[in-house]
Image 1: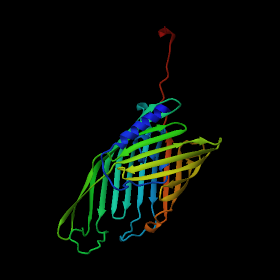
Image 2: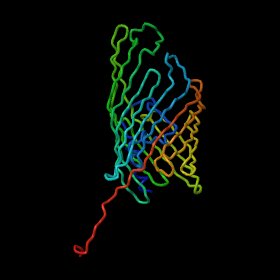
Image 3: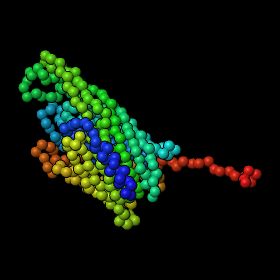
Image 4: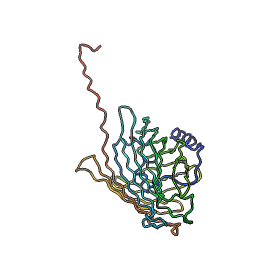
Length: 333
C-alpha cells in the first residue's frame, strides 16, 4: 500500500506541473461521477473487467432563463464505452460529450487506451492515455449586446472550430479501495473564429486549460447485504478554479444503491439507482440511476435544482481459455 501511495503522489505532482493557463471551470460536471469514471480518467478503461456502455443526461439549473432567446441552462450528454482486452493486459474505451451552455456548445470525441499491471491481493494498477477531437462553437444570433449597432459585435451566424485534445491518467483498483488521478486537455489547443460584425471581421482566440482530477473511494462491508462507500473528488482548472465533491453511497446486495454528496459552496446532491439483470440469473446487467441537486449557495444567479439520469449496460468480459495440455507417456521424460 505504501508503494501504491508513493506512485500516486509522484503522478499527482507530474499531473500538477502544467504550464497551461486558464481562468474558469470549462468541463461539464456530474453528480453520478462514480458511475461515469471513463469521462474523468482514461486509465479506467477495462479496469473493472467488464464491458460497459453508459449514457448520462444532465439538466443543470433547470428552468434558468438568462437574457438569451433560447435559454441558457447547461445541458450535457455523455456516452462512454469501455472493455478489457485480457490477452494484451489492457483496456480500450471511447467517450463522446455534447455540452451546451447558452450560445456556446462543446463537443468532444476521444479514444482511450490503458495498460493493466496485476498486483497482489487482486489489485490492478492501470496507466492510460486518450486522444481525440474537441470542438467549441458559438451561435452569435443568440447574443444580445448592451449597445445595439456596435460594429465589433457579431450580428449572427454560427462558428465552430475543431482542435486536437489529449489526456493521461493512472488508476488503482482493489476489492476495497480505488484511487484515480488524471490530467485533461494536455494539447496546447486554441480556438479561432472568423466572424463578421457590422463593418469588420473579428477573430476570437481561446485556449483549453489543463484540468486535473483526483478521485477515490473505499468500500466498507457492514454485513453480507450492506456496503457503504465513502468517496471524494477534487478537480481544478489550471489551478485557478477548484471544486470538491464528497459523500458516500450505500449498496444493498449489489442490486440497489443510494447516496448523498456535497459540492463545495454550491449544492447538496442525492442519488439512487439499481442493477436490473437482463434475465434471472444472468450476469448481463442494466443499470439505471437518478440524481437530484439542490443549490444551497448562489440561488440568486441560478435555479435551485439540477437533474441527472444514467443508463448503462454491463457484460462480464470472458476469461481467456487456454488450450488443454495433452500429455502422452511416449514423449514424457
